[in-house]
Length: 451
Image (cartoon, rainbow, N blue to C red):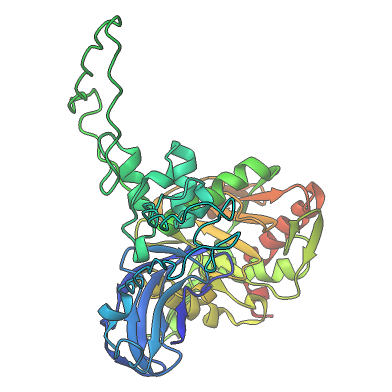
């Protein structure tokens, strides 16, 4: 019966979580049918069946499995158990053990059937000893021989939990994350064997005082504490951002951009566009300007990886989007060769898919540079965290109107602050300053964005 394994749905995926089976046990499925929803490190994806047959589910909803592990079977519904999944899953009873007894006297140095060994020819014949009882199976002691998911093993190591003493609630008795968390929490873990009774103290020893009861929950100065588990996307964000701050030697450059011409250009575009047309936003202009500047600054469009530089031929700009309790970065591919209106339509479609949860991992992979904009929240300046292994990230603040000096006179103007965070292992100060200067020139003369 062909296996359905946990697929690799993104370039950084190591394991996935079964969120929901879209077909039931024993259902007939056809090639291309939506089979299961899987949560990856970047998004939730629907996985389709790649063949026809009858579905037999092995991994329950909520189970986390490594890439390549079997989550289901798809077959023709026939087999040694007549296609009954419950019967197929039940282990076969072992055949009865037959003890062979000698049917002839042992009149030689050794018995004919090897049941006993005579010491001398004159030794009296003894009946064959009964077969020893079969010893009860013993749980494997080493952690590596216990069936457990990679996440369960990691949590067990962090909390000092012995996996050999747990009973798994996953498919086939597999130990999953919930089993280890229950065992590491105060109290007895569900499914774990009861602890052995303590040995009796010798008569001369002082009696052991009874163990103090576990303290009840008490109110603290912070009030009631609610622990919330991270989603897989939030776990990846936490891990990658911690890695970035710990491993990337960053420096930042700040600049203010005169946006008067860009404001006038956008007003003209709004007048020319139809009612349903996507008018480019200031952030779309920033994305386009970054893409053109990146084309002239190869290292800003590259990455430092494993002691060498990677310089990319395509300019793919990621745009930070606030998703459902997470930050997601969809990518505008080949942004340097796309028209400003095309970028506007694409960024709106990507943001909508992020917010409704339909974004796919291919749309979140392959970025060579990132733009993060908090100006719509009134934030003036901030420093964004580099998305490794990218060389840089641009943080965009609020576009505000304030007094500026032009030709010796104080006049009202529109100013937008930006902060460029750079990985010093690939992007040095002078080249980063040149990139930022080119970005400013493009935005201060927005007609250049159409070239």
